[in-house]
Structure formats: C-alpha cells, structure tokens
Image 1 (cartoon, rainbow, N blue to C red):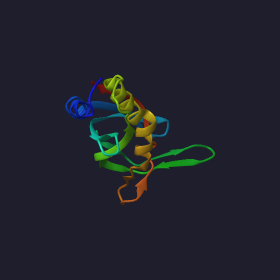
Image 2: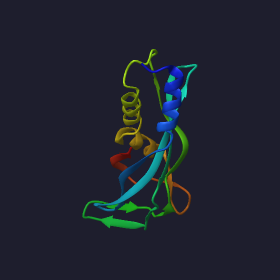
Image 3: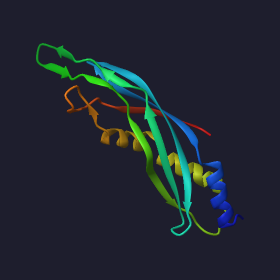
Length: 155
C-alpha cells in the first residue's frame, strides 16, 4: 500500500519526461503519401485536491512541405495546393486527466501507464492533428490528409 504523498512524489519523479514518437503520413500528391516523424514527451502531475493524474505533452514534427501539383484524368482534375515548410507543434498541451482511488493498494505504475496509453494513441493524436491547420503559400488553410500510423513510447 502506498501513501498518497508517496504516490504524488513517485509519479512526478518517474513520469516527468517520458519520450514517444509518432509516425504519420500526409498526402504529397495524387496516390502518394509521404511519411513523417514527430517526437514528443509527456509528463504527469498529481492534483491531490481533485484526486486526478494530469498528463501534459509536448510534440514537434519534422518539417512538412509539398509543391503545388495537379492530377488530371478523363473525368476530373485534382489540385493539391502547395504547403511551404512548416511543423506541427504542441507545447504544454493538457491531453488527459484520470481519477485515482485512495487508498492506493493497486499497482500505481500500471495505472499511470494505462492512462498514458489512453491519452496518447493513434485516435487521440489523429484528432489533434485534424484540429491543427497547415497553411498554404497564401496563408489559407490546406488539407494535407494527415494520418497517424504508429505511436511508440520510450519508457
């Protein structure tokens, strides 16, 4: 059995800077996607008043860019607007909160790991990427068809 103060101290010391990588693709041209990596880290904090573990992440991708291209066929033409070099970046982004039970007579490390896997997975990161706006040469929002493929934690 772990005291709540010891739980607070252990979570802050063991899970303050856990690294992870995100592998994702974006539409480069007609029928072609380009693979890109993003590197991130998350930290956990314990809010004793609300009895929650709070996950905050940082994430920065490799540069994303594509030239303007046009794909024509017999029936229709598809236009892909240019994307000047830019990165997806989240700084101190609160991604998840989970309540913990007191007394802490369970495996608290597995509790924190499961919380991280619920917080940072292809579905949640994919939703964040959909919210992020990539801008074209004229400053307009451009759909790049971002698709998260894999996330790896480096415990």
